[in-house]
Length: 451
Image 1 (cartoon, rainbow, N blue to C red):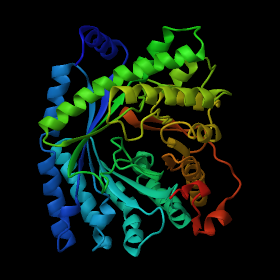
Image 2 (image 1 turned 180 degrees about the vertical axis):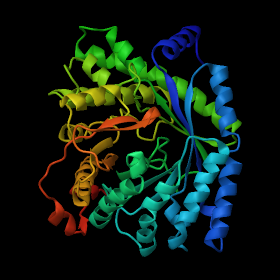
Image 3 (image 1 turned 90 degrees about the vertical axis):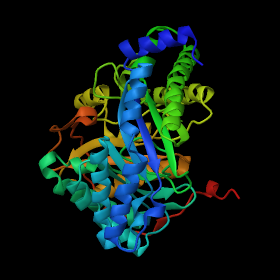
């Protein structure tokens, strides 16, 4: 239960410090939906999602009003669609359309799970499914897609990595009129988790229950305000301040998650502790790092500050909830964080530094725009680098990158809303094509042999 002081603190966090529940995401299993034909399966998928999530928007609105905490996004994640499409992979787009239609009928923001798990190898049906991703992302509005290409146990599937560089280029071209927007709905993972509530990478894992509620909390502004109050403190005290603040944020998330699950007749899954920024000033992870003492995010010391922030957030969060999961930490999406945007525009933040930061934060290279003429092999090499960090460090890493059509370094793409705007950042000009062309599997690290 909340005491009166906690209630007052929460009200202040909401009104002045941008506290919100970033998303309530319902996970829905599609495994019972496979029919005799693609057309029949698409109809069952549509009906199932609409039935399971029919009250999601209403319940979240009611909870937001009753508890006075904004709930920004209402989302659904589903079983990786490649499994459902396995009998008819050439017609996978029908399932994609059914999912997008369901999202529109429900009035939710996004639906995730047009996904494939190919971290050790690609079956023929999975290769055909992946080939449909550009078309499906270009022809739908709310559907998100992801592919898992590696894990600490299996290594990295470089055949898939090489293919996905081409898939990203195709997606950008098919959504050229929107600045390559389709790529903003597509993520490549290493060590993908089954209970992530955040888009674009959410999917409902095959190890999950039939229907689950996962909640993502967010509070960069709250953390920034808290550490502003201890200026001059040493780093130990700063870490304690962040831990106490994360505890309070997570308590709010757990309250909403449990109540939403009860009202929606679903299982309570997890609370994801991730600090997820927005383009609004005062709601920035970069601003937290700069308040910790950096002249600009991206300068020397950035990785150390981010490591401490991420660790303190997790330590505070796990004390507040026994159901912590998802990604949990700090997101660093360039286009969605005003501080990251401005640092990239100044040139103090580049892709190499972002890659180093991903070794200690929640996910990876997120919402980064690069020149439209970037070769597919370079995109694949960027994915391989990020997957290697995840594989070796036994953590989730990801790449969401936009080769912005007809854009060059110094230009900008603007997606609006929570997706924000992205300055086009430079990539290395030297070729990685021969490396990517080798294909095969990067073996799992020696520490994966634990049994």
